[in-house]
Image (tube, rainbow, N blue to C red; front, side):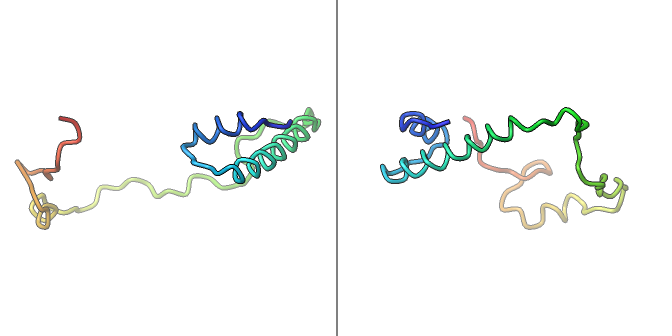
Length: 95
């Protein structure tokens, strides 16, 4: 599936990429090649392959949540440049 330069420009715009004309042409060729390969993969018969969400035997490797001693509020705020009422004080994001 060959992409047009206009389609590549639109993708670059959506990705917030500023590309030169040479880069646009290179991206056009590379993206078209990727889409051609995706088309080949679409044609592979996978009717005998069971749906798979996980292809490895890895299971949840996180440790269980456990209550443990923590810093006191004073210790946590000890190096805070600004604090107010027991909280970190930061500049407002929205006025």
